Length: 341
Image (cartoon, rainbow, N blue to C red; front, top):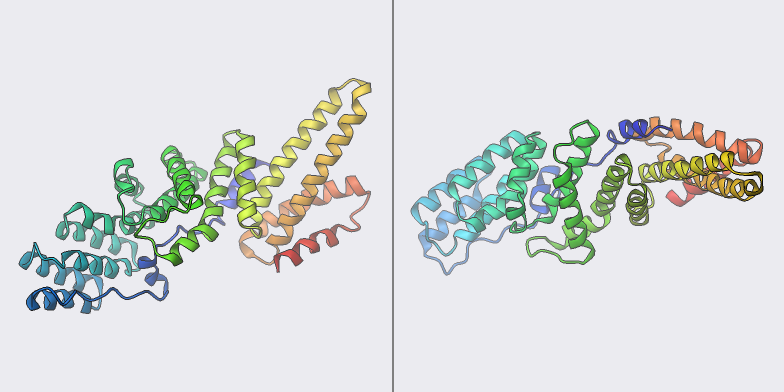
């Protein structure tokens, strides 16, 4: 199986980038409501803030927020109004509209701490709108760690950069790797930023961490760093045992290792051939087992049909070589189907 086949297949199956909780309303998820402005503020300011909260859409919220900031630029409840406005904007579904609204927000709320509320959502909006230069600009090295939630954008851009590289656009690879490794460090050390709620943090650990490992492992594979690819893909598999893409890539690495042993066996002196042949067969058995798992996990999912078909062909060829026939192959695949369920 050729690596370019894997690249072409897997790039169609990658998950979308992670949405922070405030943005997930666009996907229909329930959200915690932003608290109303504290009653300790003057009544006029409270009413102006409540107008922002009562806005039925992002455009109305921005208009009300503009009125509030113009009238009460030094209000003690300005941070709450900025957060309310951010939540309203994050719920907008259309990417182009989210970009426009996010940029308008920054004209109203210009303080650094206010920008750090909207920038995580603006990064995602830029990615969804395919404005990648803007996304990586907003998430610069100096800026991103000041975000209210830096982990979501780190994951988004790490995944995006590798997926673009699969489409022959390597422009953002270096920065994406930096962001992916930083996100891994924060998640695995359990350093939850204050702006990340518990539900998102759990989602980062269980859903997005294995995908980032898979993406970075794929990148190492395409650059020829097999040891690093094997390490990262192995970590991805340990975190998510049900992703056929990870096992397809691990199987490819195992197959490369088998073919290297086969070449060594072919070139070896007669005295060394039996030991090398045994090692080659042992490695082929690993390929068989890994491909069988990928085939089982891919079955029934239309996204992975092309991948499953190709792997099944290679799997059958190796299995028949080792066993003399295909008898027992389906039982091996079924074993991993049971594990999936």
